[in-house]
Amino acid sequence: MGVGLALLRQGLVFGANALQRRLSVSLEISNKDRSYDWFLAWMLHQNQQLTPRAFQFFRSHELSVETTVKQRKNGSSSALFNLVAGPGTHWFQYRGAWMKVKRERETRAMHALGVPWETVTLTALSRDRALFPHLLAEARDLAMRDHEGKLVIHTAWGIEWRPFGQPRQKRPLHSVVLEPGVSEKIKTDCEAFLERRQWYADRGIPYRRGYLLYGPPGSGKTSYIQALAGSLSYDICLLNLSERGLTDDKLVHLLSNAPEQSFILIEDVDAAFNKRVQTSEDGYQSSITFSGFLNALDGVASGEERIVFMTTNHLEKLDPALIRPGRVDLAQVIDDASPRQAQLLFTQFYGGSHNVTGISDSEVQALALRLHDMVAEEMHVGKRVSMAALQGHFIRHEAQDALVSCQKLFSCKPVL
Ligand SMILES: Nc1ncnc2c1ncn2[C@@H]1O[C@H](COP(=O)(O)OP(=O)(O)OP(=O)(O)O)[C@@H](O)[C@H]1O
Image 1 (cartoon, rainbow, N blue to C red):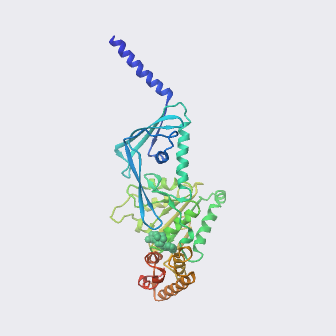
Image 2 (cartoon, rainbow, N blue to C red; image 1 turned 60 degrees about the vertical axis):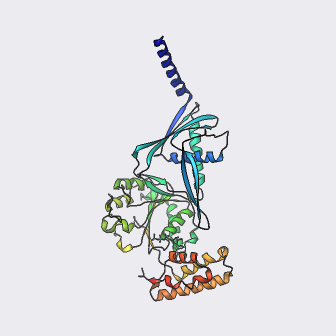
Image 3 (cartoon, rainbow, N blue to C red; image 1 turned 135 degrees about the vertical axis):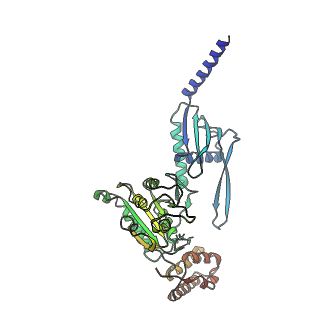
């Protein structure tokens, strides 16, 4: 009797397993893969839409919170709390099939950035294998739709690039006021490069272009690069050379595996390689070497497109090896406010549709002209002001008052 029952039990277990194998398909997605974030965002989206027949969560008791901070136009911000399926088991229905989501977190092993490894295992109670590609394609399309018309900033995650934060509203290129012709020069160069892929291939020249924007802090270097990326529908890959754990090998990998249609942005490149030894402010010496960095910039000769933007406040500190043609093809100074730039920034700020001060546009123009003359006079005696300082000043003052207290913003600075 006992033997019979044991056999029956074993038979049932075997049968149930066989049935499960035949009637269900499973898919494992780890947070090493890009589709992991897409899938979680898709789950969240479905949960918010709550289209009961297409998608339905069993009332789950294991939740995680995802907080998104949204900046409003008036500068204030609000936080949205979204409850997503946390580690544990959840069920939902997709295209008529029940699906089990098992989200697991590995607590012992951590990712280099202190993020635990995670996996979600999806098991569909259906024999239809096409469900997963459908679901993943939906999740990817949703993520792409979210990014459409927006600027995505990626940062390095170990040897991978991952989107950092929410996609941002693109900044119009004209809102970064540079000296006449400078923006056009850089944009035209970049566009000409993008049209010459075949030209490079025919001559066996690696298809890459390097830009260096140099000048004092707050002159608009970063803002311009981001606005340019947005105007060309490119993303930004922000590379921090001082990051702990970054090695020469990882750098080569990151530079050769940047997402398509993206600029690689390396800020303050002088700080990273002062005197060819790489140190950060707290004295930490990373394992990247200067020659390793140059090799990574050169990369292996390949047809892959690569556009690198570097910025610095101190051109004189850069090693000539770094700024030779091939590594830096176009170097452009982006300086403190010129009289013309200050005038334009003023009219952009207070004039046209932004005119909420009640003064006429011609009065705004007249004030802008006075600012133009003030900047010219100050420059004459060796005093200058950054565009960032002017912007900050305009934010705090009405058009009529802006000029009164403007003078104290100027300080003596060496001319580049
Ligand atoms: N030329 C400019 N036109 C419009 N706004 C500007 C300009 N320059 C700076 N700003 C404003 O000042 C702020 C700082 O600018 P940004 O970070 O681009 O300067 P930066 O040159 O990259 O500075 P740093 O060298 O310190 O990194 C931004 O909010 C930007 O809007």
